[in-house]
Length: 401
Image 1: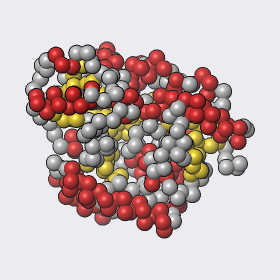
Image 2 (image 1 turned 90 degrees about the horizontal axis):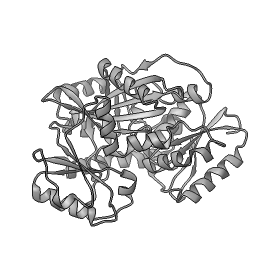
Image 3 (image 1 turned 135 degrees about the vertical axis):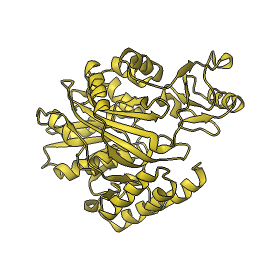
Image 4 (image 1 turned 90 degrees about the vertical axis):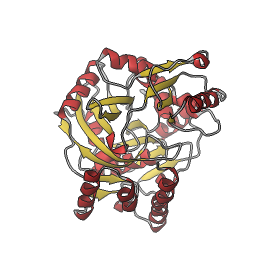
C-alpha cells in the first residue's frame, strides 16, 4: 500500500465491502482496508483487501481507537473513509469533526442525516419536494395499540430507525414485514414492541407487483453538491430470506431521464454529498415510481454499476482525491449483474420480456457476479463463493412466494 496515492478504508466485511474493493482494484489497481465486526465469506481469503475483522467497532471508543491506529500506520497517505452499513455510516457522521483530522469523509452532516435516515422525517422531506411515496402512517410505542389504518391490507411494516432495530432480537424478526390481515398485523407489532425496539414504525400501503416492478437508483454528489453520476437498475429478483428482504439478487440497468432529472434536482436542493441510493417501486395503477427510502451511502447491490461498465468509485475519487470536476454521466448499458445462479433467474423471474433479455445477455457474455473477481482468484475462495451461490436454489425454493 506504500505505493498507492490513497487507501480506501471500508467499514464492514460483507458483499458491499467486496464490491467496493473490486471497484477500487479494477480502476486503480490498489488494495483496500476493511474493518468489520463479523467475518463474512465475501471478504475472506481476498488478496485485494487487508482485513481487520471480529472487532466490535459498533462501540464508539473502539471505533475511534481502531481508526486512529490505521491512521498512525499510514500518516502520510490520503485515507478515504467509506461506510458500508447504516451502523457504520451513523458512527462516521456522528464523529465527523474528530475523523476529518485524519480521513477524507464523503458524507453529509448529522442534521441532514436525521432528516433522511429516520423514515418519518424522510417522508416529510418527500412531501416538501413533491416526491411520490406510498400512503404512510407512523406509529409509536405509546400509540400502536390504538392505531387505525386508513388503507386496506396487505400493508408493509418496517422500522423507522434501522440502526436501533437491528440491535433488537425477537421471534420471526424480518427486515420488512407484509401483513395480510388485522390479526397478522397486530401480532407483528406486538412482537416488535415486545423486544428492545421502542422506536417508531412505518406502516405503508402495499404496492402490488412482483420483483420486476422494483427499481434502485444510485447517484454520486460532489462536495460542491453537484450530481455527477446516476444509474437506474431494474430488479429481476429480490432476496427472500427474512434478514435479506430488500436486498437484490439480479439487476439489469435501465434508463429514465425524467426520474434522473427529478432526483438530481432533489439532491442538489438539499445540499447532499456522497453516494445516494434510492429504492422505488413502479405503481402500475398510476404508472409512477413510489419512493420507499434513501440510503445515504452506496447499497449492497451498487456494484451493478461497476459491473455494467461505469466504475462507481471513480466519481468519488475524482471528487475527493484529485479535485477533478465532471459533467454528469448516466449508466445506459444492458448488462446483467447477479449474485444468484442462472437457473434461479430463469425459474423465478416473472416478467417474460426481462427473462428473455437475461437469456440474451447470457449468450452475449454480458453477465457478471462481482464476487467472482478474476484478479482475486484462489481455489478456496472460488469454491466457497460458488457454494454460497448455489445455496440460493434452496433459499428461493423455501422463501419465494
